[in-house]
Amino acid sequence: MDFLVCMRDASESAALCVMLQVWANCVCSGVRVISWKPEQGPLPDAAVVFWDMDGSPSLPPSGFTAPRKDRALLVCASDPRRAVECYPLHPAAFLKKPVRPDSLWRAMERCVDAWWESLERLDLLCGGVHRHIPLYSLLWVESSQRGCVFHTSQEQIQIRQPMRELTESLPGHIFLRCHRSFIVNLSHVRSVDKTSLHMSDGAEVPIGRGGRTAALEAVGRFRTMRGESKFV
Image (cartoon, rainbow, N blue to C red; front, side, top):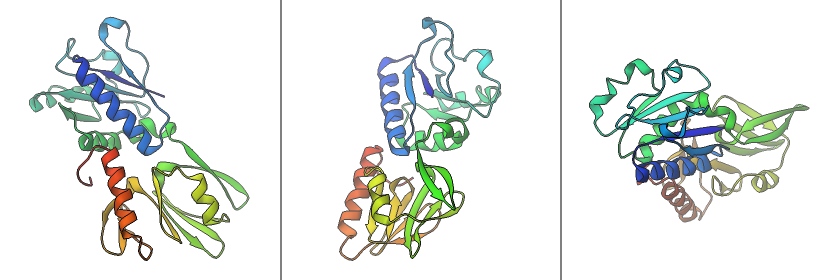
């Protein structure tokens, strides 16, 4: 799956490409980020296009303006008043330049349908049926007498897999075993207190005894990787 960055300024284009690569790494997405300019020829087919309203031409080709579920247009400009001009293009989001990581993440959430198929998935055997669960939609996991319970953004799934095996199969820069009986997806941690991690679904996942420092360090490393100074 391709993401297209159409920015007039080379340094702005490079910075946005780096932020998108970081985003893809954090959400476990297999996307290819391409920097492109109009003089290179026809607009390539892409799932998500970032278009510079300050550039020339200021508007993307008309063929891309029709809203579709499988692709998204995100427009960027230094003047926020230009957001009104882009309204007829049905953009998924307007980003004020210079684009910040927190605003980029919020914009990507608004066009989730366009990149959902690019997500890396975990193959789970559930009730004799193989389920392919996107890693990004896996919020947290708790151990149970019969294996593990997966808490996703849509449902809870019981699987007969030991916590130890699951820990080994999950990418360590995204998932943290914060307790002997719990694993969390750091993308969905919203805050930390003395005893718990507060998740995006409202759950409070306990931190193991003596594990608060390690949990804070893991959350801090992830937040730094996202290029943010606070939770969004």
